[in-house]
Picture 1 (cartoon, helix red, strand yellow):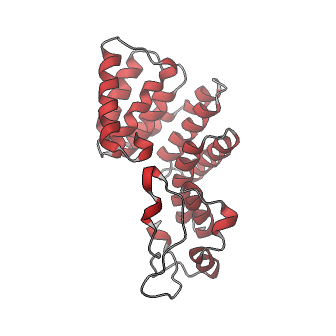
Picture 2 (picture 1 turned 90 degrees about the horizontal axis):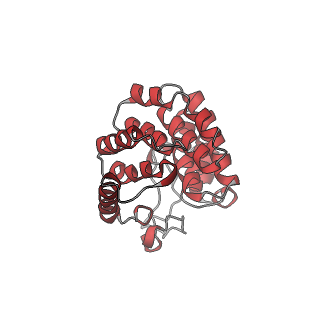
Picture 3 (picture 1 turned 180 degrees about the vertical axis):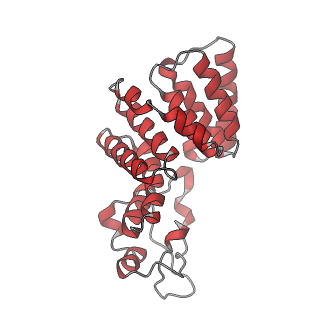
Length: 231
């Protein structure tokens, strides 16, 4: 539901699932119930995700670090950076021990997100590694999430082309294709400031389809550059 933009339904399902788990009527393997907290992050209630993750961790069923990785992300979103980084200690090693590419990429995403401000170099290393693992294992969802966080870090470290590569990857455009898109041409010329993006074709965004489509020409057909701050 969440991946298709049906946020209210996603939250409802998350609430129902939590009730089922709490009543002992269902058992979720590998600690995957921690992923239910994602719905609360989207609606701006990370504290609910934190609470649910901690409750599930106390049950001792997080065998694959999924709930712990979700807790790291939820704490970061909630503004509890120090707690998030503390929770991230040893997370990657524990995830590696599962020999599961999804689990490892998910843990790398959580660590990269938690350290993106405190230790950008460490965050970049984690996110780049996670992106490779997600791509090699065919995990499009994690590939998109990792690319989104990477786009911000690359922009902040002064590499707008790398940032553009990652943001277009996140929304479904192959890097070789977007190089001929007007914003990319502007980026290569260095014209990334004092500009705004062209209008988007929202007709293609049904059912969560976030792939980049050809833009409709606006009233002013002058080619405009995409300001990196707006990504």
